[in-house]
Image (cartoon, rainbow over the protein chains, first blue to last red):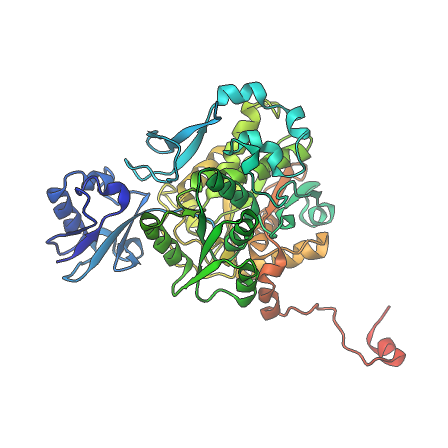
Length: 91
Length: 413
């Protein structure tokens, strides 16, 4: 099953779990499944229009999903979905 | 009484105790330091600042470091504000100024933010300083960590140019070369945060780090005779410093350091090869900054996923500024134009700033009497390789034999 990596600030929602496996075929349904198991994730990740919030980055196996198909990105058996707060700059 | 009261989310307003953290647990918005403004109002004055050291620490009252014994300094800031008459003449600007921040101890603007970050980290008991960087930040972090005697880890992309690696390594930090680009290095560090007791300058202690940026604008106002310019041109990477410069203007007005209520136009400069903020500014949805894969010689500002991008666009719009971008060729032209007219050698990020200044001036943005200040944020030796690849020799170079005859044949005087 595809697996979420939960960042520190959101682990209160996941009862402290760092990884959460979900049954899903794309990123949108994965977030729905995560929210069904641990309510609150959907609101934290998506805005009122159902799009990814500006300050949330989601990576599918290390690739920023905004550079691909966003929430309609397909997810497979061994995929890892990382939620990472937007980090700011400095170079 | 401490002057910094805590942290507040810029998005939802949630408040947090003073700690090393940079994102809101509620909405992931960025956190900013909150000051006791009422107390500061009684203390801050032009006279008090003018009596301070000739460094950015003359503004210590407005920085998040409570006790001067914790200040880690190499004499950063209070860099020259140069009236640029020759560059101004080429661009039709009679009151053009350059804030030359390449004159800092490690030759970039980063010394300001790092001096504050490491001072804060030392005051709060951190023993190890870290950062993700492509050069300028790592350079500053390594130098200031050495100065403070703190352990240091810098994370750099594996393909960083040898000259930059050398200027970092000389300070003897732990260098972790990551097989990935900057955005990937940054992401790795943001995940590492949770398993290390380290102060990452540009991540978990960013609310304090960012505050150092304000001093650039404080100094500009002071050096203009406690006046604000009409427009400021600022290079955009994450957008972090752009936002802090807007805050600096707010504080200059709030504390009565400058008179009036006129806010300068804030204009941002990006390289077209990495222009996510520019793209959004000129789209129908400036509040949605979509990430890009950077591909530009202006590597020190090439952040494909800029966290403060939406704020840059809001500030630019609210103040009557714009976000403009230039080609690779215009970046190199900007470096050469600045060097040829003013004797200042800047890195590619400065080439972006001067390129945008020139582009806007030639497009007729100003009538010529406005006071315009461009922030030149890093030294040209950091990126001298781009000149070599673009014919680094002077177009007026000749090669001669060591004889008078050869000289007379080849050189017209």
